[in-house]
Length: 203
Ligand SMILES: Nc1nc2c(ncn2[C@@H]2O[C@H](COP(=O)(O)OP(=O)(O)OP(=O)(O)O)[C@@H](O)[C@H]2O)c(=O)[nH]1
Ligand SMILES: [Zn+2]
Image (cartoon, rainbow, N blue to C red; front, side, top):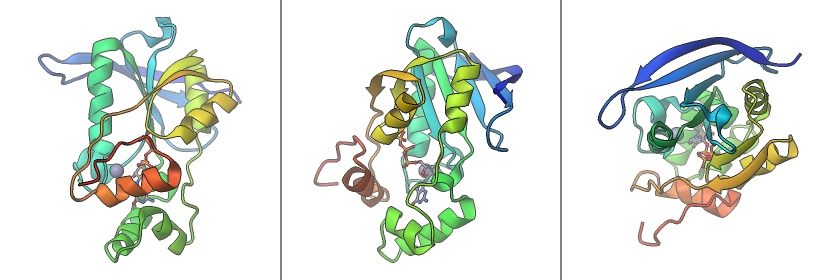
């Protein structure tokens, strides 16, 4: 079954000086049963290569501003950039790189004993990253967007999209949001998964 748009709802969101209208889009026919959502700024379907952020849900960071990761800040950066130039946020319901919220909290318990973010997954019996970006590809196709600039530091996302027929003309890195609580987490992403995050050696 090919995925298609279900509802498109206008949602004003706050921006620097005045609210900006976005469209929240739901889908029928995605290949898993999760309620993934696209948030559209402007008219990206009319741009030759719009900015796209594929953002994996992080309740702790996105909603509550947890400083253990950089997710909330990356999401807010995407929102600011897209309010300026248009774009699409694909908000994927893949909490904890696919292991779920409770398991992520279990992984945090292990990390508090000195184990890194990927090794903690392994100790809990999971692969280091269980995410599947197929729904993101299906959503882009339903939105009739096949050429994008991807806002990410993760080179593996670009590779998966290219393999599925979405052309990534540019990989736009996000800012670096390092603090004393997330520096080991960011270092593990750089050292083990080649994320493009420049961390100052003093952090
Ligand atoms: N399993 C696990 N998931 C985590 C941990 N910290 C954050 N996450 C989840 O990781 C996901 C974000 O993935 P990241 O690997 O940080 O970043 P990315 O999406 O691959 O790369 P960017 O596009 O640059 O953000 C979110 O779903 C978070 O909930 C952790 O310690 N363990
Ligand atoms: Zn996070």
